[in-house]
Image 1 (cartoon, rainbow, N blue to C red):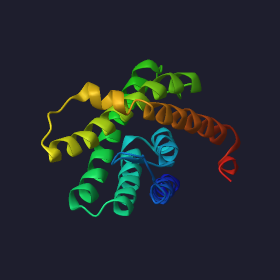
Image 2 (cartoon, helix red, strand yellow; image 1 turned 45 degrees about the horizontal axis):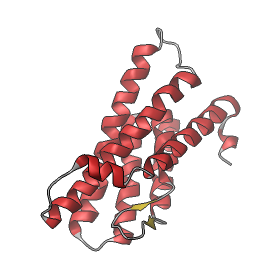
Image 3 (cartoon, rainbow, N blue to C red; image 1 turned 30 degrees about the vertical axis):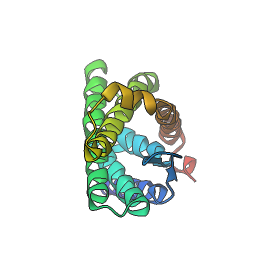
Image 4 (cartoon, helix red, strand yellow; image 1 turned 30 degrees about the horizontal axis):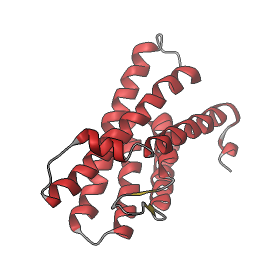
Length: 180
């Protein structure tokens, strides 16, 4: 429907806009932005494909602003989209499995699956991006070390997911005015 297409386009635009203001982590090559909330919201409203496009848009804009390397500018949106699509698909399958019939999943159930999804999305995206940097340097790949060194970022993803769930609940009850 036209409304869903408009929601996806707005979600992609907002994620890209937020990706335009990345915060580079001191002493590292990674950066974060406020786009994760928009990405999780796109997932809840329109599914994993919309969220993957929003994640790719955020990654594309963010990497364009923070890097001149083609591998970063092409790889970042691809890896972000892949990480969200895989994580979002698992989230959607879990919701379908635990929601009876054609009923809409409850907010509690959505939140119960969204928070672990946020951790999965954090781990997948972080491992993909950090592995690229590690392999470019010719260093051995150590996933647990990578996750431990970036573990504080998991809180950003969890907070973004919780905020997205709150916005989604407000949208379902009060309409689009919640975003204004």
